[in-house]
Image (cartoon, rainbow, N blue to C red; front, side, top):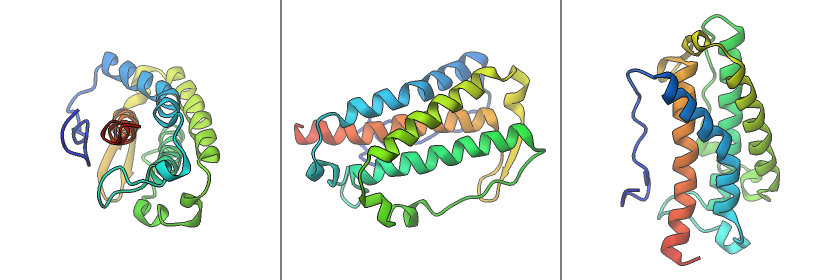
Length: 174
């Protein structure tokens, strides 16, 4: 953990190489995310859910909805890369999405999405042969990516946002 409230576990560092052990650890992180998120949220009331994790940041509620949106997109991108030749993936405006009405609603549907998407994503990832993780996709803003890179990035992404919530809880004494 760092003192940086925006990046409590540090910024994502795009690895130059990803080993089989790195990949397995990232997939394990993805498998563990729903439980880690439920634990981070346990006992929070609506006022706490509506508290920003840092000044100028999203509320805990928005973070949960963002995780559902983002990881659903990640799973779609992985499946596109498995089934198509170098697909161009669609970016989205995550800040605009966080301002839509559903981001102020109950977190229950997003928790269900996260649990379901992660169960399915991990099933697919664990079924792939090692060479499939090199399958490419093209991100219009970030350039070429592989399934390996997406898995590493979303492993970090889940831990990053759980740390936002647990860090807030720690600071507030919740």
